[in-house]
Each structure stands twice: as C-alpha cells, then as structure tokens.
Amino acid sequence: MSTTKYLKLQAKKPVGGFVFLTVQQLCLLWWAYRIRLIQLRDFRVWFAAHEMVARRCQLDPGHVPEYTPQELHGLVGGVGGEHLRASIRRLEAIGLLTWSSTQLTFATSATALRGVYDLSDLHTVYNAIPNHRRRVPVPRQAIRLIAGGCRATVIATMLGHLMRCLYHHNHRCISGGWCKASWIADVFRMDLRNIKAARKHLVTIGWLQMLDTPQTLCNRWGSYILVNLSWTRAAMEKTSQDDAQIPSSESPPPPAFSTTKLPPPHKAHREPLQELQHQKPAPQADMAVLPLPCQHTEPASGGPTSGVDTQERDKTKKATNHTPTLSHIVPEDLTDTTRLLALFEQAHTQELLGKSDSERLTFLSLAEHAKVVGSHNPCGLFAALIRRQCWHFVTESDEDAAYKRLKLHLYGQSDQKRPTPPPAIIEPPDLSKDAFIVRELQRELDRRGFRGDVFAWLHWEDASWTRERWNTAVLELAQAKRAWQQANALNRLGDLAGVGEVFGHLGISAAEGDNMA
Image (cartoon, rainbow, N blue to C red; front, side, top):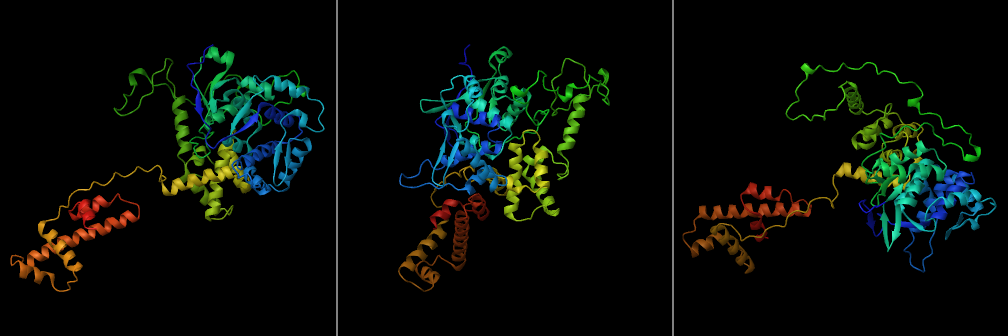
C-alpha cells in the first residue's frame, strides 16, 4: 500500500509546544484507570501535573520551581480542595506520581508501581500497539484539554490517535496516519459506537481531520487521520451540535466481567421500520415551480421527491431562529456570543449569578467548557451547570478562550488582524502663492522678534497688498492649520481613517498639512 498521496502535516512543534510521553506511560496510566486503581479525576490530575512541569521548562538553572494546589485546581477545575489532594494521594500510593512543592516526578515503567503484582493485562494492551517503544509528542493544548475534563471515551480516542497518527522525526512533529475505531475499542476496552461518536466530536471541534479514504482501504487500515498541530481552544469555530447519539453513558465492562451478549441495539433499531407520517405530498410534475434567478437549487436526485427534507429544514430553521432562553438552549446559543450574553442577562434576572464583568466572563467560560467537554449533549450539560450553579468547573483554558471571544465581540478585530494603513504620500505644498508668502513672512518676522502689524509692514514694502488680499491669504492659512491639528489628533488616537475626509472637506491635501507642521 502506498501512502504518498496522503497529506502529512509537519511543524517544528505544535501551537503551544508539546510534551514527550512514552507509549508505555500512556498505556500504564490507562490500564490503572481501567482496573480501578485510580479514578478519572486522578487521570486528569496526572496530565495537569505534566502541564505544570512544562510551564517551567525554561527556568534558570538556579531557580527553584514551586508547585501549588491552586495552580493544579486552575487546570483541572471542579471543586478542588480535598478532592485534588485525594487524587494526588492515590497517584502517589500506586507510584504513578511523586508530588512535592519543588519537584514532580512520574513513573516511566511498570516496575515503578507499588502494590501491583499481576501485570499480564497491561502487557497484553502494551503489545497490541505497534511501535510501542517510541515517544509521543503530545501537544500541550491536548494535555490541557484532557486535564480540563473529558469523557473517558474521548480521552481514549485522543490517546489512540496520538499513538497512531503523531510522530517526531528529525526534530519535527509529523502528523498523519491510519487508525481504525475498532482498534481503539479493542485496545482501550471501550464500546465501538462510543469511540466513533467521540471521534466525530473531535473532528467537529477541529482537533482531528479525516481525509477521504476509499472504502477498501478503510476496511483494512481504517481512515487516514491528521492531528491538527495548530489546534487551540480559542480557534474552535464549531461545536459538537450534531454528534452521534451515544446509546449509554457507560462503556461495556471489561472482558473479564463481560458475557457473550452483544451491547444493546441502538435506539433507532429497536423498533421495526415504519412509514413516515405527516409528510407533505410530492409535487406533481406539471405543477413544478421554476426557481428564482438568484435562488440556489439543490441537485436533483434519482428518487422521487418528498417533503421530508423540507420539513427537516423548516424544523431546523425554527429551532435556530427562536429567541434565546434558558429553558431551551440550542447549539447556536453556545456559538453566538450575542445570544449567549442574552442568556447571561436571563441568568442574572433569575438570580443565578450577579452582573459583574467577572461573572459575565465566568458565564462565557462555562459555555466554552460545555462546548468541548459535552461530547454527547453540550447544550444539556451547559443548562445543568447553570441550573446547579457549578461555576467552579471552569478551567484556565476555558477562561482564556472566553476572554478572547468576549474581547473580539466587544472590540472587534485585534490590532494584529487590522489591515495596515497605506503610507502617506509626501507631495510638494499646494498652497496659493499669497498664503505661502504670508506663512513664510510670519515665520521670519517671528524669528527676528517683530511684534508689530505684519500687514502694515508688508503694505509699506509692496503697495499691491490690500487688506482684502491679506485677509484671504490669512483665512486660507488658518484653514490649513486647523486641518493639520485635526489630523495630528487623529494620529495620536491611532485612527487615520478619517484624515483624508477631513482634508477633503477643507479642500486641501494631507501633504500640505504636513508641510505646515
């Protein structure tokens, strides 16, 4: 099989950097979670600890780092306090993590574990992974995403694609590889349908990119997938609004406790096929309506026309255009900042939180948290967190993404994205001859300390200068000076867009004002 025609992303490092984790470390941590030696929160704390160490990778040799539970709480979120201390104690008891205020160390092999003797299942999982002796350049954005809170199926899907689709060769990160959802389900002991739904969620938020692959290759090798090296929380443009419905919130038990029965059928397949009711009758051929010149027409299909698609579009349009309300949150409420702020006003009216700027930022951060964590039903998760006032689930990553989103909504594009104004073209002065004479004469007499009547002196030297001629030149010069003062004020404010309009309104060019400075 040749893969030369498939794209591979290459970069010196992903956006935000990366952390080297061995395949053995990832398998060891997941295995400890699957056999209930640690909890899912402990799993996230382990990744958060790696992020804390990565933040201090460029400290001076003589500087001693300091690790605090407060920083850990900012990465993990949740209640914190005793819950995080309990997670650290469980990780230390098994030997996966050693925590101190100045140093964090991690287990690199199964020999570092304490109190665990049966490792046969771990070796089975470890040997099922090809090229398992290598290091994986895990992006720090992915580490913060796992630490901030994800479902177990989403974490397993992320780890599987990191092992199969992300490599580090010649000091560069290379993204691109073949991965089957069934392989992830077998290695990580998860339900296949849950893995497929989690992969769809990761594609929706932009962390994964699936390329079109022939079905023959998909059957043998799986889909060709890229791990997005430029993915950030702030760069997400979509949410998991159309995720596949997961049949249950829990994965099937491990094989040791499994029966010979298959997982229950999907809800859509529990009932026999039935005819769709309340459909609009198909339009007659002689009653077909011609499309408008500017109307987009869908390509004609080979089958008969029905009203099912029209009903679905009308239903979707009705659902997305309604006024935002806390009693019925739709995916557009999480993506549209204006609608989200309207929900914030309703939450304040219902006394769920205050109206300060910090509480507004917390409200938006909770929406960002639901967009990423809520792979099954982000809108329902957001509504439940608001109703229960679980503001403490917000992490640092959620708050950073919400801050950038709110800043973009309030102030528009950032300065880096604004187009650079064209440089001003310096041209020779275009003042009239009389105005030029008056300006130069006033400058010269002021330099010599003359304090008398300039017009009287000029009229005595040249009788052709009348009072009317003098007033006309002085008025033109005064208009030019006012125009320059206004342009200078706009320049100090950093807004040169209106300079041309100011000069155009006064009938002079910007170059003239520059020469009068």
